[in-house]
Image 1 (cartoon, rainbow, N blue to C red):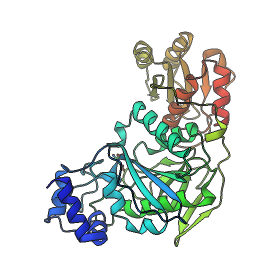
Image 2 (image 1 turned 135 degrees about the vertical axis):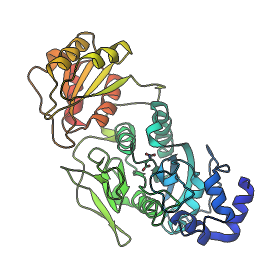
Image 3 (image 1 turned 120 degrees about the vertical axis):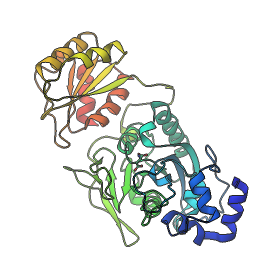
Image 4 (image 1 turned 180 degrees about the vertical axis):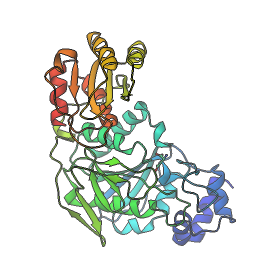
Amino acid sequence: MNYKKFFAVSLLTGALFSTSLLTGLYTPTTQAAEFVTTGKVIAVNSVSAAPSITKTLPNIKILATGGTIAGSSASNTDTTGYKAGSLGVDTLINAVPEMKSVANVSGEQIANVGSPDITNEILLKLAKRVNELLTRNDVDGIVITHGTDTLEETAYFLNLVTKSDKPVVVVGSMRPATAISADGPFNLYNAVKVAADKQSIGKGVLVMLNDRIGAARYITKTNTTAVDTFKSPEQGYLGAVVGDKVYYYNEPTRKHTTSTPFDISKLDKLPQVDVLYEYENNGRCLYDAAVTAGAKGIVVAGSGDGSLSSASEAGAIDAGKKGVLIVRSTRVGSGTVAPSSGDAKNNFVSSDSLNPQKSRILLMLALTLTNDVNKIQTFFNEY
Ligand code: ASP
């Protein structure tokens, strides 16, 4: 079936069809299921047709990047073997016609990949588009659909480089669109609700899953498959969507968006930063390999309070002598890595409460501005 035919079928069968498709109620033996499982007719890099505009409603753009929220499988009980990044943005939007009562919604496809394949190039393309769109008077907020595996990294990157107070909400799902009780459609509806709500202005980039609103700075994925995987272990959520209303209880205290110095508008690449993991009997060979491969920064997922074995510390100190910036983070999953008096002389920085993957994001951006270890430490203390 080609795209035009699929779209005609969609129009004929209407909203019920679309909703059923994404909530898994649709029988997999029909033509539409063929569309989902073959994945041949998906519009990638498309801009959706101009929607009808209701002047009293806010205008929200949905930028799609793939992930499980756009994932499909031949089986509606498959929640692990599906293909992430299968459905196009128009299919996601058409599946939740209820969004039309909340906002004027239109979509753009930025990428359609599983989130482990989000590259620095995709990050820069996405961030530039977010900044372009938010300068426009006819855009009030942005929702980004994304795979959950690296969602927190993209959300934190945008939290540091978006130059607007308008709401930006990153959303994903843990079950693919074809699953029984797929969580994507409701998460997307809630994300549009949060982006359309004036209370969300100026709160930095937000993450919406499982009815909770998280701050990009604090939220992390904590469970491989559970629907309630996104948590902020020490800092908590900012709010929630309950019974169709948006509630906020907390504010992010770290600087974000318009209060950071990071400007990606003229960048077409980011400095190479690698993450190395600490473990018993660890040696220095991966530090040497990272330096040889051209790393400008190394984040250590240290044990405990950002500790390194004597052997890996020797490798890290030698990397530091060559100008490579080393961030001591932790593999523990929560808590703050305390500064150490020996840090600066070795070109080391402590990560505060940033986990290794978010430390990598901040270090890449820091290195676009400076190599000064003390300055970079202040970034980690403030952002
Ligand atoms: N592997 C998927 C991804 O990150 C998982 C998900 O989206 O939940 O794209």
